[in-house]
Image 1 (cartoon, chains in turn blue, red):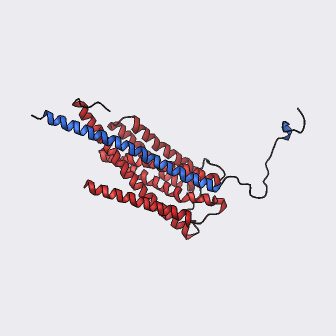
Image 2: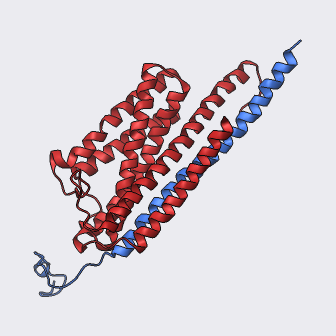
Length: 77
Length: 237
């Protein structure tokens, strides 16, 4: 292995030092937009799945109420 | 009577939509940007994050009273409120747990840290999540409902621990909202937070009401399915 190249273990960073100036790479705007999108997506998913479940439950309930009511009518002398 | 309650529900829903419209407009157009150490513009997540945590407390409390009342004297209505409280608490908990890390990445440099408040909040959401899983898979018998109610009561007892975790064990979570007036240094910041609390209260009430009605309809369906099965009517579709 050659000395002084990036392959050389001796050339690896062994410490980090602070530098002057703004080196921040995380965008605050991106975080803000992501947070709002994730929050709304969660809420919409919760309401959407609940809505579908409600429609299923109500349809089945109507169907069974009619069937049970109908059978009670039929059994009546 | 049912029509009147429907009207109130839709009116509440309209109020919720209106309050969120005002909140979003105010947060993005009027509320000032905070200092860079607080995340700069990402600090605006705060106006949804904190009210969502408050809504979690609100729904958890409703779930607690429903569950405690069910344990004292079981009824379908009490079980429905216990169920609705837990379901809504989980969704608000998820809103807090997803919005917080995105703000933290900017303000703290990391998405997650095992801070006492974050950890206890996550435990609470996991506990409520366990109650939801139990209700979904363990059947709808009285024993299962009692078990779920007991877990709900235990989960809600964690809420004061979450709230006081910062005072009890420290950590890096901010304590801006305090009883002594808080650390919001601009009137528009305080207005935005108040609007956030109002909007989330409306949203919590609407979601609780809706989920309680759904839970009641589900238990009515279970009861009628038993009657139908006893009479030999209608295979499940």
